[in-house]
Amino acid sequence: MPLELLTIPCLADNYAFLLVNDAGEAALVDAPEAAPINAALAARGLTLTTILLTHHHWDHVEGLEGLSTAPAPRRIGAKADAHRLPPLTEEVSEGERITVLGEAVDILDVSGHTVGHIAFHFPASGFVFTGDSLMAFGCGRLFEGTPDQMYHSLGKLAALPQETLVCSGHEYTAANAKFAASVLPGVAAIAARCAETDRLRRAGQFTVPSSLALETATNPFLLAPDAAAFAKLRAQKDVF
Ligand code: ZN
Ligand code: FE
Image 1: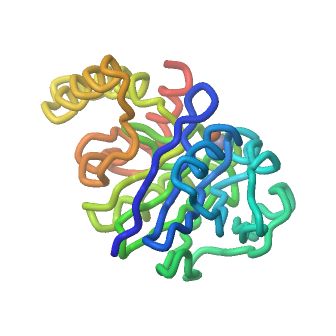
Image 2: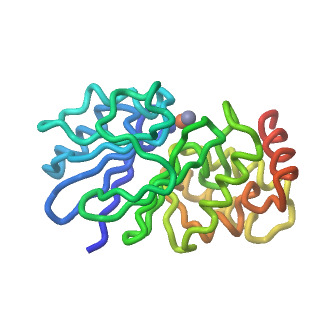
């Protein structure tokens, strides 16, 4: 049975995600805000067994202490980020495979936004949790890493099976759409995604998760032909 995915809006524009198995156990990816996560757990009577953290930024960990969890769940994050993450029970690195809710999860280093940022790939259920690395129609700002690092990170994500659902950390898609349309005008697939993004947001719907196939076809940062072109694009977006 594939895991069920619940997308939980938090704060102004963050997302947390719950994965649920058929035994009523849940795994949380990032904890921007406790109340909406607690509400989602309570509404379904779920037991939170695992917390996965993509990176240390406050808007991805701030809700941790307020979660109603008994017994204490596993807390998993990057070894390279452990010194500035809340206390972890398991430190993981690129290439490791762990088990969450009975399913294999591959750890990818996707540094760029921060150094030590990781993604969690669930190959059996077809999800990848990308935090602020690959985002819907865009990518995270480079606070710590180099353009080369982020370009390499995005390349790893783009190489996953195209049907994978990209579960990213923010609802930034409308702003990303404006940028995509300005740098790649006249690309039909991009224009169509802009219209679809507009339609979804007007209807109050989420644009996250998105399919990797859609990202590889329309995300300007994945369409950049090389690291230099990526660097230029990312710099343009910073001042857009
Ligand atoms: Zn961040
Ligand atoms: Fe963030």
